[in-house]
Image 1 (cartoon, rainbow, N blue to C red):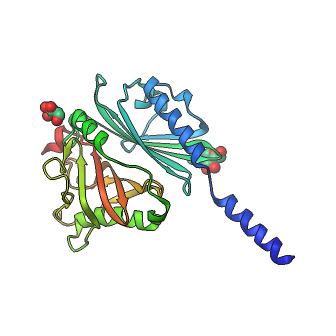
Image 2: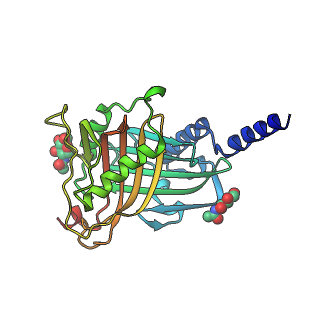
Image 3: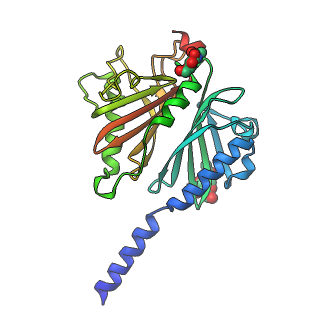
Length: 269
Ligand SMILES: *[C@@H]1O[C@H](CO)[C@@H](O)[C@H](O)[C@H]1NC(C)=O
Ligand SMILES: *[C@@H]1O[C@H](CO)[C@@H](O)[C@H](O)[C@H]1NC(C)=O
């Protein structure tokens, strides 16, 4: 009897800590895409105290990108039921101001308490929305069969190893074959789609990627890491807003997307 009660309460505790449902996150993401399309944040399930961060700057949501109607050509999202959060990449190539927007939504009691976006447009690192759209559409980020799903920790470790390898070449990122990287609008998989073209050599030291924030989705094998990318932006050597959106299959990296914001044209390079 006591054992049964104990089991029942363990079951309840684990349900209570399985923070939110995938359906709720999917519905909220659909609202987010509609809201950004219309430039109307009122379409979102926002908490009264929701905060908004765009390219590492706190903004009044009414003066943000989310309040500008944007033509969205393509979207791809992750649903993190453990963290109760989502990630969405919007490709807006046919908009009058072409952009690629990476957004994290964080939830409490099914309401959005935090929005963080990396908004890249013309002049940002190797930016080309037309090219970005055409390559992302060709990729396959299908649901991973249950038996082949990686643990959360494995997916995160793959993403971290990639970011860590930039500053320390002795760290081997678990690249798969094939592996392709979509950086701004530049695609490494264009010439050799069957090989690993993701390898990134070491940057000049010291090189430390800070302010990492993760969204992980085991069903899609996806992790997004927002962070501050050092070195690249000549006026911001300590780091500029960036996002790496990575697909992992059986522990190996299949796709990498990167958007990096530059304070001057192409980060002064
Ligand atoms: C916002 O309110 C929620 C409760 O609705 C609370 O859990 C959360 O910590 C608050 N966030 C901030 C930034 O104050
Ligand atoms: C962007 O990419 C498209 C498609 O690859 C190409 O046709 C176009 O010339 C590129 N634009 C710029 C400004 O490089």
